[in-house]
Image (cartoon, rainbow, N blue to C red):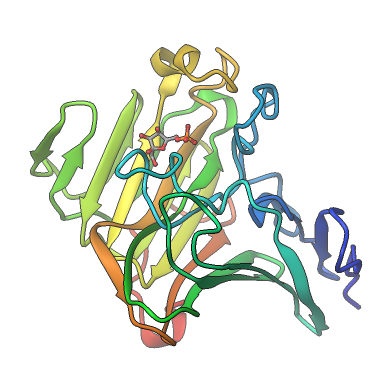
Length: 299
Ligand code: TA6
């Protein structure tokens, strides 16, 4: 049997999902942010700073914030857009034999936000299974004008004990290095070893990656996003972030399916979808490159 937590559709109570096998996840109404995911027989896979909430006006530091319609400071809107600070409605919650799911939604009228004159509906579906969690983020243009937007699923993956991460899969793609402010060609295609401050936007990366750090291994499968961000402040960059502990910079890596330089266009009435599946690997599996994605495994 699957237990489902909060059923109140009009409150700010977080949404809790459980599986019979022991997996659980928590979604905040603020930003529809998946702030915790613990697979069956596993440990917490997502990072939340202990200083999150310590600075007025900043959204939750961690989880999987949803970026829309602006990435970072690349426009007139607040950093990473407007969805992170909005309280979303819970519109559906369900239980199937092997999957618990929840759907959250928020609607925006033209000029609800200064600098964004368009109407849209944003929806997030979260599906929890024993070893995986799947997020489907969709935007529908509910207005009368076409708009272009940037987007990302800004996943903060926990790195236990500051252990460097290897990203396999991998990323045979050019990237923009935000620290160098220049475009770079990858020196190696795989793995990408992260043990220092990193902030890169990869063009057309693989849609299936493996992130391993110590005995923690996560497979990420994405769909609908043409780019991928890899960001961590690491130890040297933590003190510059006001809602992050000085000792927390090496506790996470963000791997973010994104549409940034390749912004998406949405005509009136049409819908865009971005998807991310996180799959927990068992520590006993040998090091390996992730298998090529087949249609049946694509999110
Ligand atoms: O997605 C990477 C990034 O744009 C980094 O440059 C870094 O600034 C990060 O996002 C965090 O943004 P935040 O607004 O959450 O502090």
